Length: 366
Image (cartoon, rainbow, N blue to C red; front, top):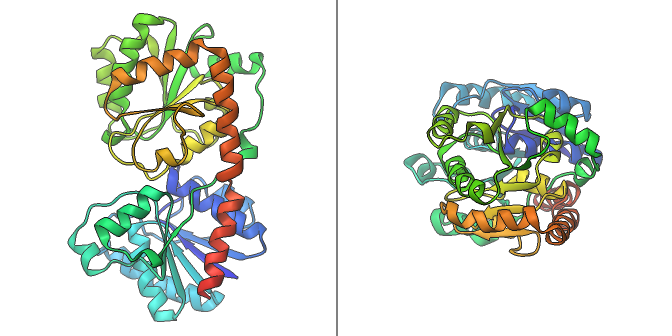
């Protein structure tokens, strides 16, 4: 098949990771795959996997932007020139562009819903969900049906997937110590951490309040925040306000998350309201890191409470303390959950399995 994947950009983020992983997996299955986006630092990884990239300036948050209109005409030419059979869009802007191109060219159109959206006039007048819409978790599927009245028969539930092999490396103590030195982490401290953009919904503040209580029981703990974002300065201010500067480490966004995951003992995943699924959550589990997470959105699709991690109510830092300390102190529990976490990713959340289901969906439409 000849497939065109659309996304706004290819900089670090969950949707970008999904797009690049899916494109490479579909290519390995013998398909001709092209990705069109506004470009970004992961273009090289994409093309190294044999996938073609076409740069289009679609970096806008408005589906009414002139950039979208220009993109429609450029994509129309590309679709006709390359005899594209399926267009698959990942973001709202590319959904709208892909919708019009599919109508102009008579090509099948698919979208992926990566999270939760607020209803607005634009989505009411122009839903642009496509012939089929992929929901990445049960919670997202319910959201589509309940809040946007998308018919169930139009929705395909296909969980996110990653390549578990990338996270199976076992690091020696010497390698971990060297990485701790690189990131500015103390060798003799236990490490909890998260990988997320600094946005209000990711719960960085909740983790800081939890750390404040954890340190009362276990003083040699450091918390690592890996990521960038506009809200970073507010988190830094809170760190200083709580007098936690010696126990909080800030690390820039990582293209390769394995290194930073390797120095974490427990992965914290604490969105406050809703989360589609969380690719970084899968990466942490594949790296054999037990997880303490909030019970929101698609997280329960991955975390089985007491099996491969712990689930707690959101925005409750007090509830994060006990399970975190248990994992840091109870070695038997830690190793049991580490093994269970890795196994669930291998069995249920591999990118190969995800790509198989997406490819089957394309074939059914064609």
